[in-house]
Length: 431
Image 1 (cartoon, rainbow, N blue to C red):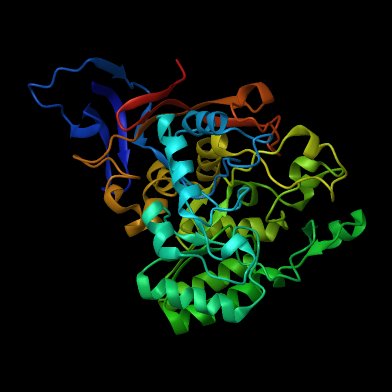
Image 2 (tube, rainbow, N blue to C red):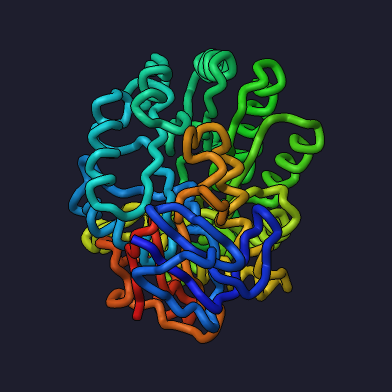
């Protein structure tokens, strides 16, 4: 199948390309960016006039709910949500049921996803067996099965010794470890510590839960030189510590969720369970620091933190409701909104959801390295057409995800995804 995308503004942050140009695709790969070869005869021409032609979005945090939690989301529905959001590559945490701690489970998930011919699924393997924090998994076998890194998801390791051994092992073989910094005993609340949580009678999660964990991780990284990606930084103090660690030259990267980037604890309203999230929403000063950290590169990527939750699990008192929100379909619009608010260029905005997360993945991408997150001639044709004009209302009917809960319900968000191609195949078309 030969496809020619014409008349669009092609923005490829990885190469710095930004001009009105054509993109020619054949056999699932990009054959030209700029002007199609003279002998190129397309089977389909896509007119991208008025649109941005960008690399497919790369989301570093998206739960698909399979295996084991199909009541909250089926692989089919969440993959449809991914391509509707322009996401062509996504990283899924290992906290499925059963946990992704065996090669067979990883291979089954990848096989199921590949059969759908939609977004690329890049699984994280469990760092410890069953995420119990005791015994390390067989990282070599899980890597061979397709894991791009290893994570504890939302389950902190109680033993610093086990975490040290995990980082030593990962460093020896060049594996990446993905950790959400959260001290085990301080991180058990349901809202950010502060006056609002106190007035509402909700158990609080202090900033110290994040910073203590970060200090521990950085000390271990200094001694092991393991490559660590910090998932969903949530506080101003956390941003400052990441900035210091990078200035020191530690091999760490970090991301922030669309929820923490735009919302604060005040958005909990009157115990609105749609704002029951992990990590918890913090105060405005934290949100402002997260926005600044993403803008200056301290935080490398913006993630959707897509966690579909079924309606019954949200129809409970705030503290009992299941945390999580759908997000992949909102990633472009909320990235664009952040960029508009911060006065950033489209290249800067698109970079945080394409080239920069792809750089975080780096060698973990294997044969896809140099293709994902960029429009590279000879690379896989993961492309999306984006509009930065107009607004659309966030409603349940507008979401393809099986989970309809989002704290952005009722918002009017800018921009939309027009067409998504994965490997040269049109996986989504809004026309």
